[in-house]
Amino acid sequence: MKLTKKYLGDDLVAVVWPNQSELLVRVGERTWEEAARGAWAMDAEKADRVRVLVAVFDDIVVGAWTVTNAIHQAEIPEGKTRMVSRSTFETAADASLDYLVGGPSPRARQRNPQATFELRDLPGGESLIGSAAPTSSGLVQLGPFTLTVSEDGRADLHMPAGATLIVRTAA
Image 1: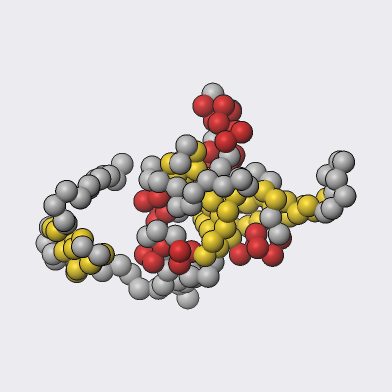
Image 2: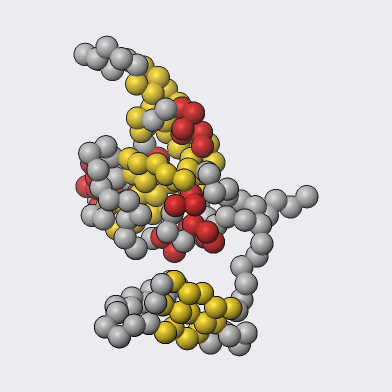
């Protein structure tokens, strides 16, 4: 039986800011994916619910992957008195997440270098949830914006005067 439902609305997205790895990435010693998988301070039960890993640098998404496994390690760090659980993620490429790369961070930067939230709250996440194949034509209305895609593939966008439109084409 072919599994067509890949993600659920209550699956978790982990957004990480691997800023300390930036120099290693820039000189080619590490990829953003390797930096993002790192050992993050996170409860093991929460880490086991993470299905999407998103890496952000300078408020721009630099990578997004599906999570295939989480490996946990709990220890009391030197000089500390409480147990800290760290999780490292195993990841794989998923073309359905490519729309995130190059776009703005789905979460504002915070004190902690990671955040989690449900997939249903990820911008564009509704396209990742469910088992139905995406339709090839139709109408989508978001506030004052209306996008119509005809069966022949022509797309028309109606938007308010003065609104900004950014177009990103597939690589």
